[in-house]
Image (cartoon, rainbow, N blue to C red; front, side, top):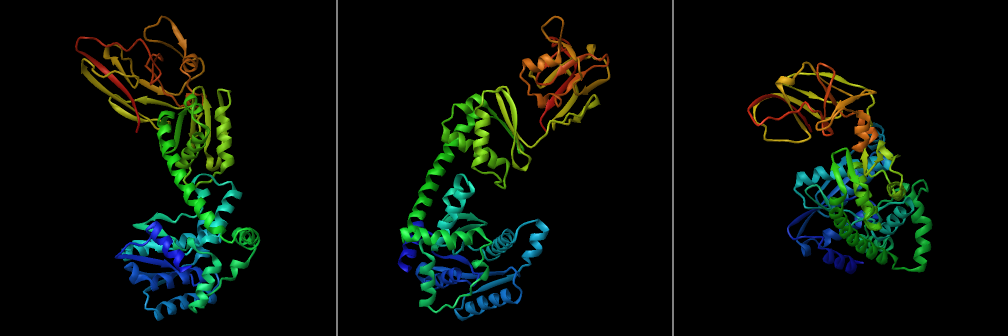
Length: 459
């Protein structure tokens, strides 16, 4: 085992000279063996080793004794040790988490604080080869997608440094023999024997069967993990590149894509494109392969419109050539404001409406600005949501046209129509629909003239 772990450390360059390594130690065989191993070879690797222990206070006196055991173990080997008691049950209740999630969050927060306090470079955790097998199998069964299928990473960023896992090269049996050989007398957590936890069931019933087929199973799973992760990183970068042509608009709470451009993507990139969009919007990762396939099928259907509901209140809304992933609901409530001149209004759709006076020859032209000559200004200006039967005279055309027909011609999604502002003057005449249509009241002269300038902008 020692030879394999040393080769693994060398292959992945897990330990750097003159670095400080914190070892997460529970007192169980895995973490105790890792602490002993790193302390034994600390001079060879030129590292400083520090132990960190968290008592989650789940088992009262029993878990407190485990903390005392870790402290005494470190004292005997002259290893600096930082231990802390955290009421994980109270934390779980406060944050509505299960016991395991709460314990993990409490533990990692302590490790994070300790790394900053001690200016440490790495946090070494004792996940081993059997843990890797269990994790990959569990993720496959759960329908995990993306990098999650690679299981436990050998290295990952953490705080000011990184997490390293040298024992992924070892099996549980090898670690137990190591403990026996060096008379480490680790503590055993009785909860690891309960069938309540999914991981325990995989460990007790699935792994023994697989290991009968191949005793070096952990090596094959570790190879799969590393190769799969390399491939996934490459495809991830390729997907980001392809998404640049597919994404039309992007904010913190929504992403709009071009449907036809999406359909041109190869299937492996399609899946990863949807995954990246969902991952950007739903940080908790509350979605699986089923959701990815549902979104892909929804996007590939010929029907031009529709809505798909996803976890965490995320909706996928298809309309004409576009598809929007958003948490926002189309607000059907009407609005109506008097526009101050000069002044500024915050609109229900998150945009800002500015007004100001201007004298001269306008140089900037665009759909987001409207120049109303003062001679045509009939106060007050009103900005409101659309009404049934709305009509306007369009710049460059004779007669009037229904606003509904304008929206249809412009392929404005139904769910956005009630949020688009309508600007009318004191005569009730619609003079502008920002970004959509202008009336014939915008008249820009080549001579200096006074204007009321209306602008429609992002916040």
